[in-house]
Image (cartoon, rainbow, N blue to C red; front, side):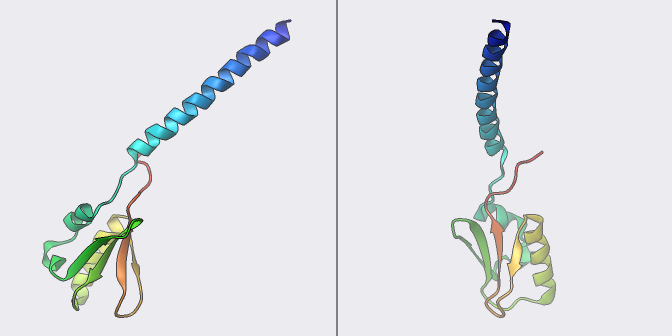
Length: 107
């Protein structure tokens, strides 16, 4: 009889724990940062903005060059993109930067 009572309590606790896990997952999703074209544009130095195009391709914000940029401007842009969790995709003259729109939780 006593074991049945303990099992009932444990079953209730397990149910509550499952509900809590679901609520915590929702809370963490709410803390995630989402990168937008505007966020990327604001992070890029003003001096190189005219040389770039920005697009939202669903999963990434993509930054492409409209024209040739100086090596120093490329370096500055690369640092800004890296600070947002992005990377350079090297494809020769058609290379571009991409920044994931969804970043991890902030803790």
